[in-house]
Length: 320
Image 1: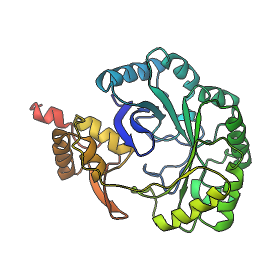
Image 2: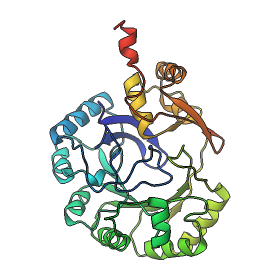
Image 3: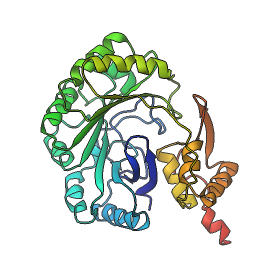
């Protein structure tokens, strides 16, 4: 079940089952300074490519185990649109997903490519990232592969926004001193204004990043949000709230490691989603060093660098 992770509770999309198209290693055409994954040199193609049948079988098993999720989120340990069989996957996924919605999380770098765009048009929801519109800032924050051309990227996003019939979302993650200058913000707002966005999510670093960079305060984000509102762009600024609900999601050690290797989770989210037994396994993984805990902006997060870290807890319990 390496391909499947979660379910993960999103503040904006509900409870989702993740589908990782690059479960063994990070494969991305960006190396963003704020990435939750370990830093790695950007690449323009996948070195390891999953078989479509294997992905579909994993999704089928995941839906059988977690039938009540709201959606299937197609992502990757990197960038999912690098997956060369995305169009075939989406066509065949229609036969097994039932009423579940499909969501794509992409950096948007390849939406100019006709083959990639054709696959992305099959999703119910697409969320793309936009971290900069100027070459200087783009180079500093996204550290893209040399073949990625920002002008081409922006044209591709704009054309896709005109063609897409589903729900379109955008996200900008602001990093202190890099992409938060007033001029850059104004230009991003002008770029997004003509698009039929369901919502623009603006955020900052709230999980352990790959590189040493700083986050903005909620007050700074709210001030930035007002700029986009002046362009009549629907804006959402995230705020963490404490929810006292007992979770019941049962995850084994392997599933916990996989989930945390892709998306560090806050202590609050773990308590809300996971069962007592799952949290006991998490504590054992924390003690043996497979999982680490770090405080970001006053919030404790659990994370691990790789799903292959640590021993197999289930095997140890069986005495093997």
